[in-house]
Length: 445
Image 1 (cartoon, rainbow, N blue to C red):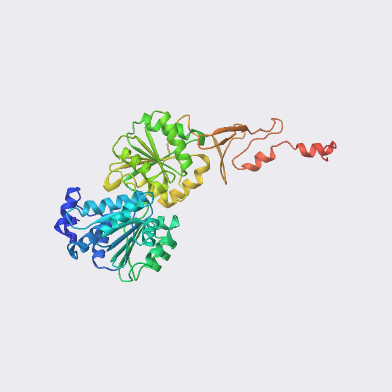
Image 2: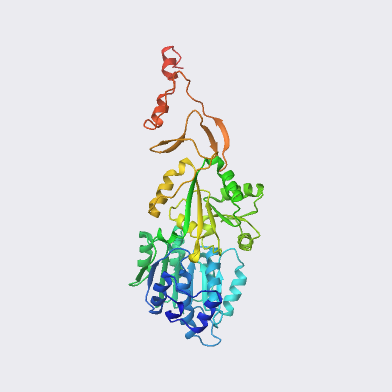
């Protein structure tokens, strides 16, 4: 379906043409007409499906129709969970509304509060913000939201996961009761629906793509690998296959720093973004990555929400995310707007259970490839996977810093550890020293 058939103005269609957008995505076909009805909406939409345009275009059009020259005051508020997503959504409003007389602003923590306050006082029509920073401006009386007609909660599931629901509730107290509310979430879980019940009135439910089908444009592959060899394999895959732009996901910021350091030492120009980095550092890293000055960007899940990197071909998961649903967000950074993408995941033996959860979410098994020299030698058990006791050495950290070796049972006492026996076989094979000592009178002090 052409975007021109959705009732959009000539000014907006011209801006879309400048961006090369002509056809509507499935979520846009559903969301745009419903936005014009002014009823509340709850939409399930994955990243990379064009959901931002789905709510931004109707808001821009309706506000421009009602615009009175010289009168700029907040009429639309879009709340997002992270500063990266805030910048991305704001950029979309700027691009789509370039031929309209409307003004917009992006508000997030880490940026200069006074500079933001001065711009608010000059007058804006659209506010894109993280909830915490908007609440700061409200409390300092830098902004008045009594005339807001639209409230959008983008990535509502992440807003809940990050614990921002109380800030959102506080903001709602400063909004008029008559407004259109739009809640968009990658997952319509129980907690999201409970939030919707508090905010929305008889909402229209829109669900377009399931979590599995939304990633259909992305080729996925898993590489089993020892935990301590992950960084080495990561570097090998990027270098040997000549991937020119790679986004690497990790769970923790400490691991992100370690991975970034190792990749730079391997000769791969790498930058790191996570919650511990300043807004300026994150902006410079992302800009360098988009411009091709940086080959690899290592990011935590929270920092990477909202990243929009055109034509990104490869995403690599250094580990499985804590929240299984974040896997969809990770691989959704590639294969966007109909393009093909590749998602590579490195799996250590103890992550096999988490991988099964991901595959259950996706509704299919993810193909595995094995590279000689990296495949772990494991014994599978009901509780996960464990190295053969004969070869086992404890490791620590993301890159396997060696600890003291774990001793093995003497040959005379050791029996074969089978898959069926699991850990019990290994425990049974240990020499019963304590019982023997007691017989000799050494078991008691």
